[in-house]
Image (cartoon, rainbow, N blue to C red):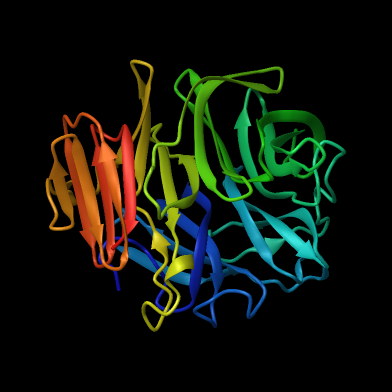
Length: 355
């Protein structure tokens, strides 16, 4: 068991879902197979944990089960939002391969009731495709917005589609918010306010690769205008990052450190959540650096990190080494069992690697 990277006592874990601050806790929901250490043996659930300091975690009962006709093939990724002291979970519900959007709500943050009018978004618009998933809901400019990840197969583009609502339950399609050329589809978007700007993030999937795109910019007339963009994490083992805002105004990023390529490495799944990082934008630079609550865990060196004349490399057993070339003004890292996270120059670049 890792000391500082959350993972459940048993069962498969992947994408972080519904990251939110509610009733004095930070809540972490996540894709979960509670009865198996690898996916696809049962329909996807939402696991649940909470913490006050991101060091000590309390694992809670499974939050969402695929127990309705519209989500019988899984309760897939989504986000959370608080409205009128109620916690709402938005998730991609799947039935017979058809992806839609459903919502569940809770007054205590532990027990959830699914909305009788589900699904609240029943299908994809002409701008999208059957790859229609991962609702990211936020409140901005006096109304609620839902960003959906999709793709346009004819144009070979990954797209983020935007919906708007006054009450979280009735949604109107607004149009394409962002797109990427030469890509299959996008996944796991986030859309949050950051001071006078907005952050828009997504995992963009191409034919033979994927990347985490994080952009800062403005939001006008339902469209996002990018000012600066970064991939931040250049390591091989981070995916599906999700960003949320807390009551201190921090934009917090948590990602999945996957075990896809490490099946059989141990008797159980080794996937986990990353360290929580605060995203900042200063002097035209995006950075993601561990929160104040966990910064004391960082060190300046690790046996797996070998400094070189023009950077460093991360040595891994039986796997390709990870190489960084560039100026290093500051380097911090955290080793937690087989996980290593390296933060270069105050979080201008991150390297997450399983050793």
